[in-house]
Amino acid sequence: MSLFLAALPVWVAALLVVVLPTTLAMCGPLLIRRHYGLERLATNNEIAGFKFATVGVLYAVMLAFAIIIVWERFSDAEAAVVQEAGAAATVYRLAAGPEPQAGATRAALTNYLELVMARDWPQMALEKEDHEVTRALNDLYAATLSLAQSASRPQAVLLAVFNQLDQVTQARRARLHLAHGIVPTNLWVVLVLGGMLTVGFTFFFGTRNLQAQIAMTGILTLIVFMGLFVIVSIDHPFTGPVHISDDPLRTVLEDFAQPGS
Image 1 (cartoon, rainbow, N blue to C red):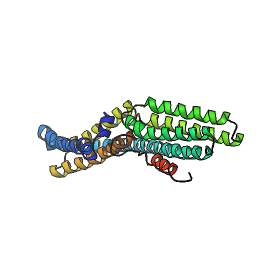
Image 2: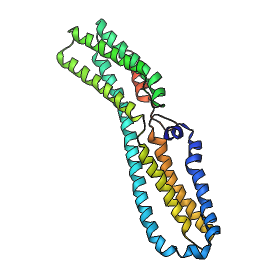
Image 3: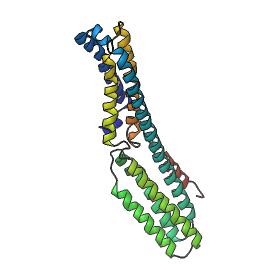
Image 4: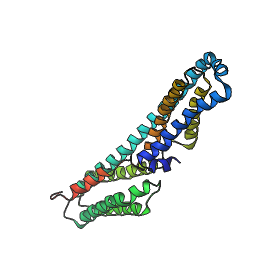
């Protein structure tokens, strides 16, 4: 469900996650008031007020914790893309030379980056992995090993090349892993159910000004589900309108095409 919502346009996701629940929640006090009456609900105010304060604080802490964790993982995915681009640029420069093996290594690296942008990104949006990109990475390793066996590079340079190549692999693994979503299903259940219970708690207060109570319930619901909307939007870092782009890799490829690179 979170993948489906993350893939929707922002306004559609906001309508489903924020506007619709808020509208339904604002009908709650009206329906409860008609069923139980003001006098009966007003008897809950004193005791329920203390309990609601505890419930609200507990849910606020849990929601804030989830948002922070999701944002940190989103940043980790962005950092992985930047790391992959930087390591690829380093390999390209260290592999410079007139030897056929050097040209083959550079060509394999360019092919890998092009396939990453053309195939990995669309697949990650669907929580999948493209095996053709994996084969391109294998070809890059094979070309680099051939360059190492040619004995045309100092040992220190070859060590740096393979170190950067390992970083490319690790960065790709990181983004493929994070593309599957950050928030587990059980936490989603807790967040959604907790939000509904927190909002539903307000239905059983009684104030003489019903319009004010409906407005307060709507504001609370809006705040709660806007927090959930933030989590939905960035839970899948490579899916939907709010996603991590391949611009760092694209920039590296543009640098490769420059004369003298």
